[in-house]
Length: 365
Image 1 (cartoon, rainbow, N blue to C red):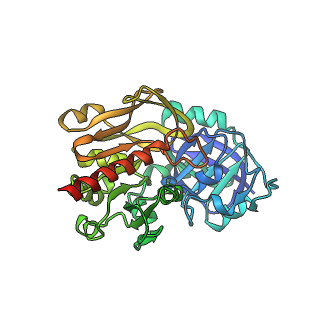
Image 2: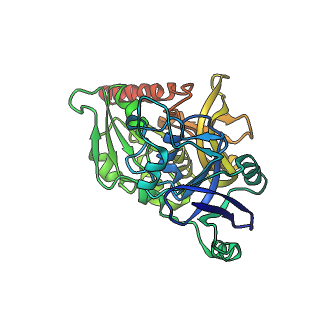
Image 3: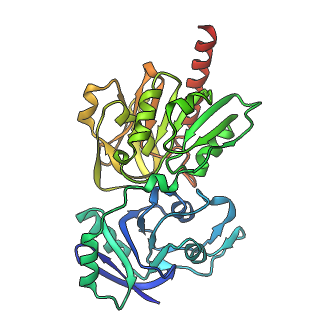
């Protein structure tokens, strides 16, 4: 099945299709991870995007039942150099192509992904289309220029109903997690730390959260522009001071905007498993897993009580902020980071310590 990838600037890459045969208009981004394509494919933060994998061989260990980050992958497309349809792994339950076909994710292989990644680095993330080889390229470019990126990504992937993980009766802490497109490993990391987690939809109000009597509030990762989820931002704005708050990725951007900071879109984002981040509180360097298009504007923090705690050593963008007085902190990267690295798992322990102190202060008040 011959297919092609057409970019909005007219660049065209021909290859072989796998997965879904649907035509897909997408935002095109790249990821530099050498492992973890299953976690990437099932990460809700990639909603409406097609990911160029810079590591050349993809699909060689198949898809394992226990490694999904969401039950219904919502990525639109995957672009690879070499696709392996005969995986070798005792845990393999399906091939990558089978899962992509099941969830209507279009794939194209045989692409010079090194050249394509350099193109994105030079010109930025862009609109693109995976389509049949015979379709007129100029017509596709015209369609892409008229097409607008959707703004409903968070509402599309967020849970539609409240559910609970862990034992609420015998847990040490009760965490309410706002699902903006949450990866499954986040909940697993909290539950294994003796937390019961009540997961709520992205547009849950402060009043509804308060009635759940949490010890802490967590805001998850997710897709798209944080400016598109003003309801969530307002919920966090009202929640500040009511209980400890921890956010990652999109949650970091939402918390920052709730305090009055601004966010902006990066040229090509940060996506990979080896981004160096400096913890300004300890001086230590963490190797981190990242997946985001937006960052917090440093100048806009001047009129807020937020303190910068982490920076990206590749481009000096902000990777973490905190407000100790309010027991609020957040990071731009993924401390749960399945399949790795594990340098930043201590952030979950910090969240637990904040909840412990808050409960003690509440008890002694």
